[in-house]
Image (cartoon, rainbow, N blue to C red; front, side):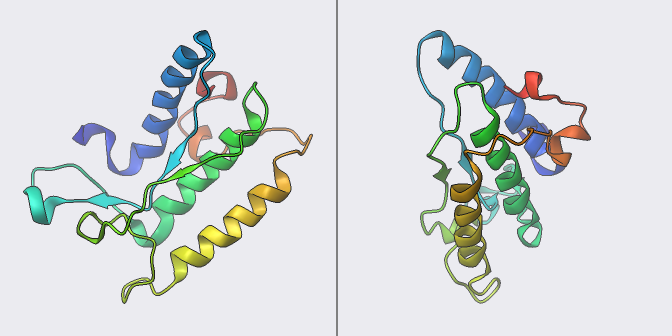
Length: 144
């Protein structure tokens, strides 16, 4: 799916979540979103493979912005679970563990984001569309 990788990943992920959530709701199934820092297995499986660039952490932070919105603003109420796609997959670039390249930045971001989510899910504040989705003219009703 090379056309769905890179800069438009957040938009396409939100659109896919729309499809999954709609189908799941019809059958009483909850959806728990996933976040990843990036993905690149081209060194192992060839340069024609799709990749999600880490963009020095921007991919991870944008994904969490959407996840926070998703967790708090869906019709079924706040959801307590997020799948973090990072299982020490150094060869695929999905690791958040401390590294020479990123030090412990991703671990600290994850801790801080988790604390922010725990403290803000029950808010009655409005659910504005994250900028990442807004610039693609996607609206809450479309994304959920």
